[in-house]
Structure formats: structure tokens, C-alpha cells
Amino acid sequence: MFVDLAKIYVKAGRGGNGCLSFRHEKFVEKGGPDGGNGGKGGDVYLKANPDFRTLIDFHFKPHYTAEAGHHGQGSNKSGKSGKDLIINVPVGTVVKECNVETGEKELLADLKKPGQVILAAKAGRGGRGNESFKNSINQAPRTYEKGAPGEEKTLELELKIIADVGIIGCPNAGKSTLLSHISAARPKIADYPFTTLEPNLGVVRINETQSFIWADIPGLIDGAHEGLGLGHDFLRHIERTKVLVHVVDLAAPGSSPGKDYETINRELKLYADELSGKPQIVAANKIDLAESRQSLENFGKYLKRRKKKYFPVSAITGAGLQELIFAAWQVLKKTEGEKPEQETEKESVYEYTPRFTVTKTRAGFEVRGKEPERWIAMTDFNVPENVERLWGIFKKMGLIAELERMGIKEGNTILIKDEEFAWTKRVFEKG
Image 1 (cartoon, rainbow, N blue to C red):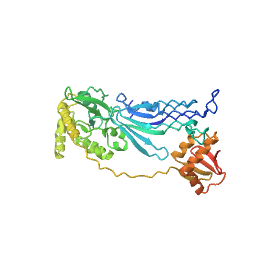
Image 2 (image 1 turned 180 degrees about the vertical axis):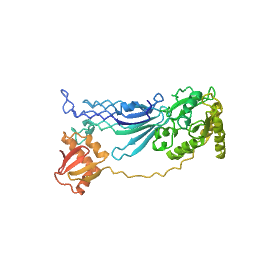
Image 3 (image 1 turned 30 degrees about the vertical axis):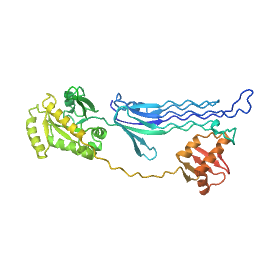
Image 4 (image 1 turned 60 degrees about the horizontal axis):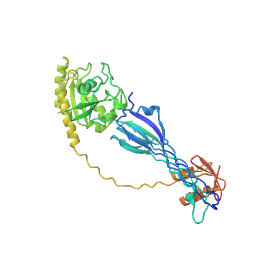
């Protein structure tokens, strides 16, 4: 089963908690704090692996979580870092981050090369133990941090097959037969429409040292750009190819080669303008059939008026296929030799992102922002010193002043992420 679209949820490892500990040894007075730091959580990476061909595994296992960092211990022992998680994906996978609330998608990476790796979700750092908060004023701190949470993301994976040449055409035009004749690929072949339900790849050799990859793209029909037939599920795979070989059936009953040719090219343009601009070679197929002779003559005149070169071939007997292969090879080499246009350097624009936002609600006030949410997650509210420290952090951040400006009163409720607090004169009281 060929699957080229999947959605997964990834979660990086949370950092280990810092330790609250004091040195206790016989004959050692005032041993002082010795709580170690927590270990960093594991990151989540995506790696392009040529051994993987489809995204089907992600339909059965859509959730991935990296290992959390280990907690710190007494005697200044730091926790062990969590193991990184590497997720293998096929070469040619486009990775996008999905915003669950807005539905927007942001491109993270296009994994075109084998071995290419991207950081998909960053791990949380380990919390600091109370030994880290020791200073000349506070010799016995009880303050410590919990580990920071790792990033959580919903990712869309879209596989676009990477091939040098894409074979396109109407259903039953002979695309699969052509690929099976010029390569070792063995796609399914039959005399009914939509025999090919998934793209097939084949390596076509020019000589002992040179070869290139051809892809048999499932048949397209009128309206494919709107999802009709096999639709745009497979049009996306044409985007990767550098050269298109357009196979036209000279013996298609109830149709004409010229009409089929126009239909396919119209669908390419309607799906994406750049597809219609790709170099295209026309292969007039099934010249071995007697009924194709008149069609070949008429189709040749049709293409000549449009100044289009074509190759009469028979995918069954192999007639004309060598000429077609070498023509595609020459166009490919010319395409690869052309230097891409230099992209004009975009002026960098600084976009200000507020550290937090405060919204007044019927229940009280709601605070949103990665920074305050992270500090909430790293605070143990069972220790008064930690709560006082959090108040100081929010005061430096400007959050306390913003709440007072918006008219917060004694006893009002503050919601930060999933935690509720009651406002008091000095500190937060967890609800």
C-alpha cells in the first residue's frame, strides 16, 4: 500500500527536575545545599532514509515521544539526559507544522537528500537544583526548578517522489508497459482504466556508468486538478520531476490523440503553472497496431502545427524506445546544466512578538505566552520559596504591572495554561 500523506504528533522529552537536598554527614556542621541539576530531555529529529518508500507506518503509529531527562540527586549529582528520538522518513518528504487552533501550516523542511536531518521538536532543559541558587546572602536556599517541558507539535508529512523523468498520460495509454520495457520495474499492467494506483519507479540505464530514474505517474483525466479520478493525490509527484514524457494512446477508442494531449496539459496548468512549463517529450504509443497508422499521421500534423517534436513508439515491441530514452537524457542534461535564477535577497523584517498577552474574562484574567507558561511548568508550588521566586520573575517580565494596569483585584482568578491562581498582595495562591 502506497501512502504519501500522513499527520503525526511529536513530543520532545521533558527536562529532569532539579533536586532539593542538603548535605548531611556526621561531624559536618552546616553542610549546605547539594541538590543536583536535572538532565536535559531528548530532542525529536526527522531523518531522510532511502530504505523507506511510503508513509504507511505513520498511519499505524502517529504519536512519538522522546525520553525525559532524569532528575537530579543529592551530593550534587546531575540527572542523565534523555535519549534523542530519530524518526526515519522517505527521501522526498515535505514537513509542515500544523497549527491546531487556526489550521495554518508552516513549512519546516524539504528532505530531498538521503541522510538529511532536521530538529522537529526541541527538548526541555533540566531544572536547577538548590545548590545552584546558593549565594552570599542565601546560604541555604530551598529554591529549585522542575524540568522544562519539551516542545509538542503536530506535523504533516507529504511525500513527493523524486525522479528525473515523469511519465504522464491518460489511463491505459501504456505508461506502465513503457516503464517495464525500459527498466527492471514491474508495475501492474491490465486493459482496464486506473491499473496503476500508485507511482512506480524504475532505473533506466544509458550505459554502464550512467542512469536516471523514471516514474510512472497514475493516469490523469479531465478534472484531475479538482480531485477527479485519482486526482491531485498523484499530481504532486510530478512537481519533483525535471522532464515529462507524455505518452499518448494512438488507438484509444472513442477519443483522439490531440484531445487527450490537450486534456492532460490543461490539467497540469490548472494544478500548478510550473508543471506546464516543464520540458515535455511526446511519445505517440501503440504504433504496432494497424488502427494507429491514420491516427499517427493526423497527430503528427497536429503537433507539427504547434511546433512540438514527438517520438512514435511501441511500449509492447520496444520500437522507438531507445530514441525516446536518449532524447529524455539529453533534455535532462540540458536542464541540469541550466543555472537557476538567483533569488533576490529579501530584506529581513523584524517582527515583534510579545512575551505574553493578558485577556480579561468573566472569571478573571487569562495569561498566554510561551515564557510564562514555561515558568509555571517549572515551578513546584508546594515550596513557598519557589512561589516567591516566580513572583519576582513575573515582575521583571512586566506581567505583574500589566495585571495591575488592567485592574486586577484581591482574590481575582488568574489562568495560565491549565493552572488557576488567586491574586494576593504578594504572591500567587494556587486554586
